[in-house]
Length: 67
Image (tube, rainbow, N blue to C red; front, side, top):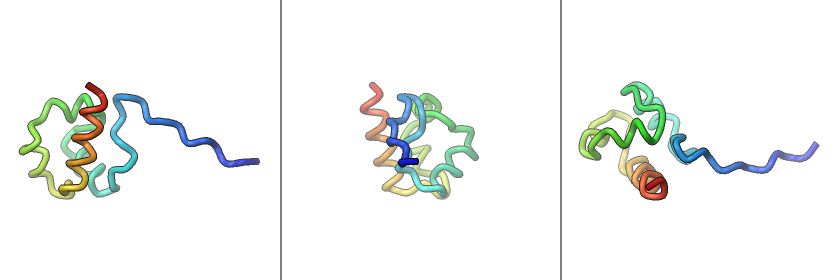
């Protein structure tokens, strides 16, 4: 069997590019989707332990594409 083609994430899913520590930080704060993330100010997200500058840029890009 061949490899499955990579599918694009649904528009509301968190980006696949996020590290596991970033995902854990978001999930720990109750953020499971881009819609959840959009409810928070960037400054508040930046305070989450495990969510660094690269993860914030990834979230910013995903939210910009979503809008």
